[in-house]
Image (cartoon, rainbow over all chains, first blue to last red; front, side, top):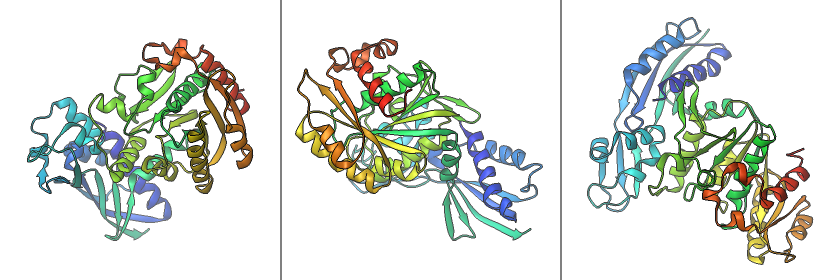
Length: 135
Length: 257
């Protein structure tokens, strides 16, 4: 699990993009794509720890899971994370955790068996609703 | 990963992480061809091995999303290690090797254009090469999504070595690739003519002259590596006739001293 890399990246990005330019971030939201299988609580703990003593200390943030929707381009069915991954091994799931686009390497459409799968939602990590004030 | 500023402007967080990682790499060498089957992956893998053998800090990134073969050439099977700063690539004779092939092994790779771009971005964002003198990037044949994505993500300190064979067909495709890289403002380090049998040279040097770029040399067809070096130890690979000729070409390109 590379939660630390992600959490550190979020904090570094916010500091260099906003704090270094004289903005104070008051709140932000983190959405974790279901396919990336990050541990929400670990991300919360890491971000909380990493912003301590920085310009971001005191900013409010929330972490939520964005549900995955994957469309089969062959039969047009849209599938959930559970439907696609229920028969996968932990090792296979770990590869999808690293690179969500690899899902068709390991999973097939539960309806027609095709591997022509397109991720519609829930692939990676997004930071949204960044509220800033001029420091 | 994306950032939305004030609910309107979206910035992809991975771009930031990629820039940070690439800033630790002194120079990036794309190895391309335009055409498949010219020995490009072998040139890329052996270039990486030669660099690490001569004491450079080097990495190899296999961007061929449909037929990743660099890791196979180098007999790499281990997954990258998860460390605090990201995924640490497995080592072959001190060469850091990363390939999508390490993640999927023998599973199919049915990636659409957009998925290839996303996968490349993710791979670059999570892989921690650390400080490198050279990163060798094995491009897929052609000038499609992977090449476009790589050129758009890797924007500084970069150049391309183009690999051709004596065949006229190969030369025509390499010409098209060379025009593409020139138009994309990627420095052409030089052209190599691979798979030369005896004295049957092609006209790659003429194409280099026409394009105004260096011709780096001929590489002979080497039976020892032609049947792909699945079983050829990397330490042996750098001692082959193929590697000797490639070494001269890299010296001419001032990549190897």
